[in-house]
Image: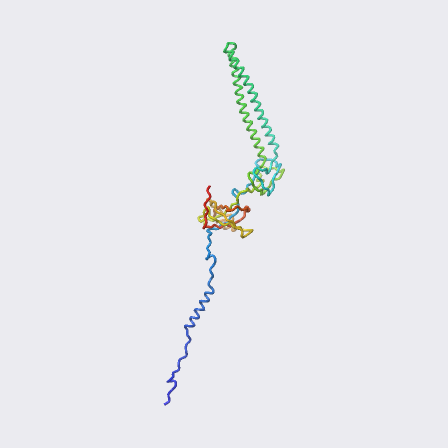
Length: 320
């Protein structure tokens, strides 16, 4: 009997592909692709900033620049300084024609001397009148003269005493006139009120000037530089007196920066003036924040700077 091979050895079905291995390979490729596009951590995440606020500012001095005008009207006879000069306190800047004021001083001096002479003359007359009145009074008491003559002499002495009191008042008035004339003479000279640098000169010799003509000199006082920063109203509560800050230049050397601390924070809101966008300036409200440098620096007045306030360091606030 013939036996069928297929019956003894049945044919095995064809192997199906291992779907699990394919799925694993697919998942691994997707995972590797996702890892290749993952963002790298930034430096900001690893090193957070300690600055609590940033503001625009400018370099200034307490009181600002000083504009000086001539205190009296007249013709400029002398201009003693030029732009760029350094002047000391009390140094002459300009001078008007002093001849009219000098004549007034001379006249006041003459009036004072006349008042002195009048007092001297009255003193002599009064002494003689008192002597005569005393003699007549003694003669009347002794019966050698009449009482009327003694009374007349006494009244004459009293009148001279009154004239001497008036002469003393005239002497005081003459002294005051002399002081006034000397004061007016000084007003013809414009002096530097303190040590400063001459920034601008608009005075010319021979020009007619008056107090209403405007400033003739602009001076930069020798005072420490400060920073006037415009602190946005949203940062006012974060900044405190004594807080450390970093001041950096907006132009010139981009790496220039200086250490400073907050001196005071203003009490009044005002418009922003240092911004570049007019629309933002119109709507923004700021408070003036004044900072002083930890070390003196000879920076230019009006220089624009950026101020970054460090909330991690606060110096003791200066006492008034």
